[in-house]
Image: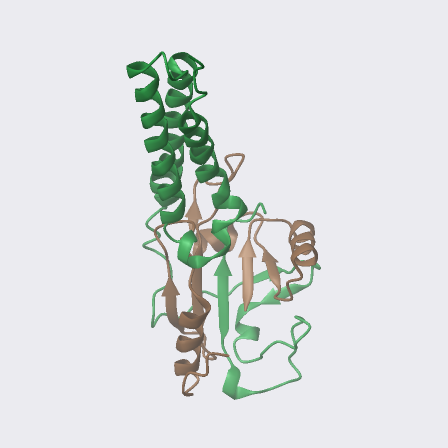
Length: 98
Length: 159
């Protein structure tokens, strides 16, 4: 699992520490990747900055996209069970829910 | 005759306020109440009903119930708070771009390299077949094909 946002590395590290997250958080401060993946939310940030819209992608070992979640509401995110089921299917396992 | 302070007006207004504030403070933690704010909408609706009951009593029985003035003010304020909350939950939160150009299922994900929170560059295609060590650092020494793959989560930031 990796997370990406426009926050600087320092801001993301602060978030990881304060919430006890272990997943890596990547910094896309200039929206380069966000733009290339067409995930920009223009002026969606608190001070009018361009940020990423919420989106989740599951990519397999060959680089192919296997699952995409683009919600139409900022508060709705994928539930862990959904993602685990897709992940298990992708790796040829019966769903374990772990 | 002593006039009642007309509790439905006060409780109703507080309930509307609580309906707004309790979303970020409490209900947003649980997907069932976060995905659609039915608990908050219910609290605000109940609050508005109580406000209505209290204001009606104040106007119809002014000898028994206070509240023509404060009731009217809190009533308008309550409607304002509820309208603002509905606008935020149901309109603003859903104003997302279409993102039609985003990578689709079956396409190859565009590769990239970005710094992680410790300023170490991370490359997507390097990760796709190497899982992470439990402490969150990228581990290319382990190879466990049964668990390869990357879940990429783009989020708004500013937390």
